[in-house]
Image (cartoon, rainbow, N blue to C red; front, side, top):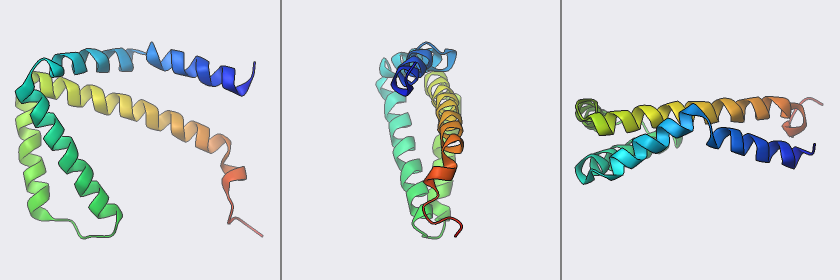
Length: 116
């Protein structure tokens, strides 16, 4: 079996995983409710912007963090939004675990500036 075959097998396995199936159901439920979907979209956009700011070295903006917390508090009270966020985080964690496993497997070859 080639590496590409294994990758396609992994893709099929992911598509059939409990995490992804739960995510799809949560997304369908969210898509059926415009208010919940808008709340989640706004939250994720602002969260991503705040993370980007931190990655680029900007100091944490307390006002933005408080706004994100208030939005998250609203999401927790909204079952469709809450279920989507939980499913999204669960699937993202699975994907991050897989990326780490792959990265660890080829880490030695990827160390371009490694030991001399």
